[in-house]
Figure 1 (cartoon, rainbow, N blue to C red):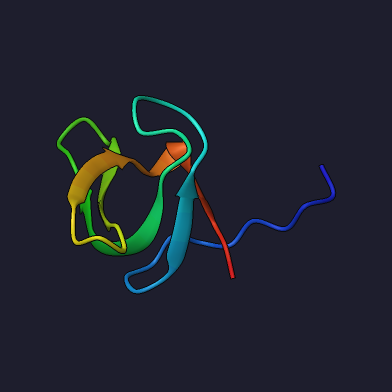
Figure 2: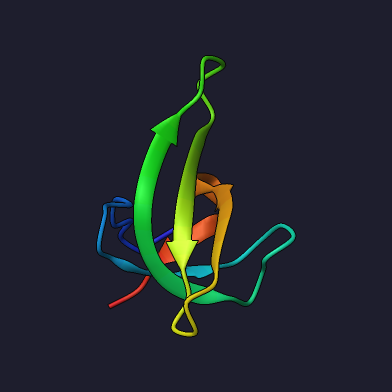
Length: 62
């Protein structure tokens, strides 16, 4: 893999590449680490709809 990974951070634009919400894009709003170590994020879409997904399922875009 030659692609550089950009860390997920609040305010960054992202695209969901796997899971239930694949294909959706938005802005990262909230990052949470569960007791088991899974990192979840809340994504805010341009139309105002929010959804939660795992951080491993997203790719940060410009």
